[in-house]
Amino acid sequence: MSKDSERGAAAVEFAILLPLLLMLVLGTIEFGRAYNAQITLTNAARDGVRVMAIAKDPVEAKKKAQAAAASISTSIPAADIMLSTEVCPTDAQVTLTIKYNLSTITGIAGPFPMTGRGVMLCGG
Image (cartoon, rainbow, N blue to C red; front, side, top):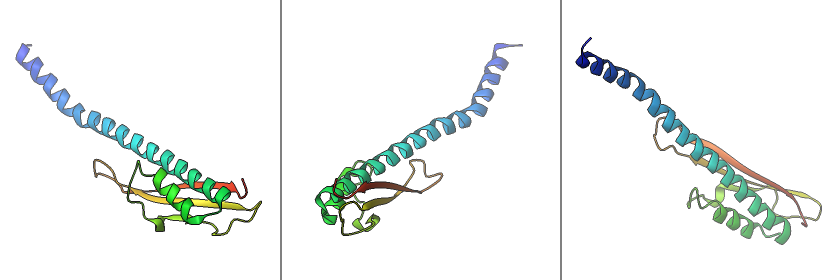
């Protein structure tokens, strides 16, 4: 066998494997982004519900959640941040939920709906 035919075989093998390798790399990147967004949403919901449980101020709780989620999106509308109650009596539970649609870098799939939820007992 000549060197030219071996070089051609290597090129064909590379052409067959390249799409698979690209899908693996891009899938890993997309999964990492989605995982990071989920953690950020959950932490933002916890920060917001903590403000509601201690300060009992629903407006400030939503602002805190928006600010904490700003690393994934600076445009999460207040309508996508929901409190289970606007009043927080002592020893009652309050839940803050943030909804967000994560768009993908590749555009192959998605957007993916994501939810962050925080629950805390009112009064600290």
